[in-house]
Length: 88
Image (cartoon, rainbow, N blue to C red; front, side):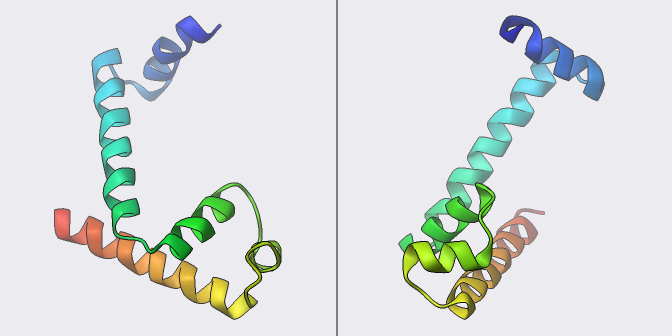
């Protein structure tokens, strides 16, 4: 039941519903900040990658080489690490 899902998630995680909402808001803010720092190509790549596509399929879809996709994902990982590291 959708209505009870947040409460069930909070219970399982050992969090109050308020803590769960704050965690979700923090995750959304993190996502927004990271996306702002990605090129449009990197945004396309990460969207496809997170949807479950592999390097080969992403390369085919975007008409790029596999190495180009690999490089983009490495840049994305670096940007995420730098963003998170800078926030600590």
